[in-house]
Image (tube, rainbow, N blue to C red; front, side, top):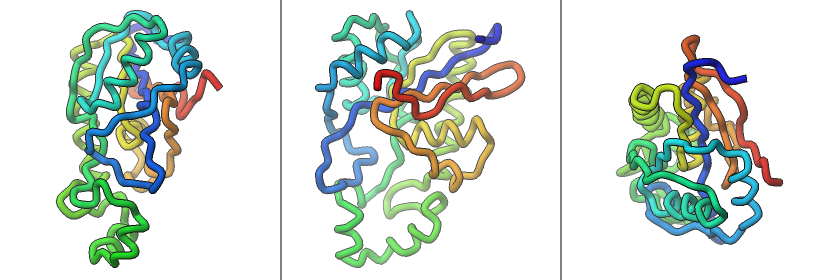
Length: 204
């Protein structure tokens, strides 16, 4: 049951990015695979009517929204919020973890010692990402109070939102699995955040 006055966040991870070699995508603006028509049809059946649409500004989120529209879902023009983009992995973006290990990257050991708190070279830490995602969600919740917000975002964004909603540490938030085209729903209520579902695949 929906609480009166709650603002409902429907966090949808974008469609899968083809990446046979385990490339670190991060903030790279790469395309995704939107060929799973049945998945988009299933999502369109469970997503709310007339939501506020929010995207990170990266093309894989726009393509995912377009795929929803192609199966008949009516969506408004998006609010583009760059602070909901994926974690910035700096100079590691475009490379694979295996490649970094093989090259004996000097910063890799420190990162694996604390993957939530360590800043990749030229990037940002996951802990810092949580702060910007939390601020963006707070602002959008205030601006769109009482609405359904469909946010087409990234795995890191969803984990950051859960860290905020559950008041858990960055390291704990990294334990959440977030599959492509999975739904996570959290509601902002007068009593605080409420978790409705995490990493759900309603079309499978």
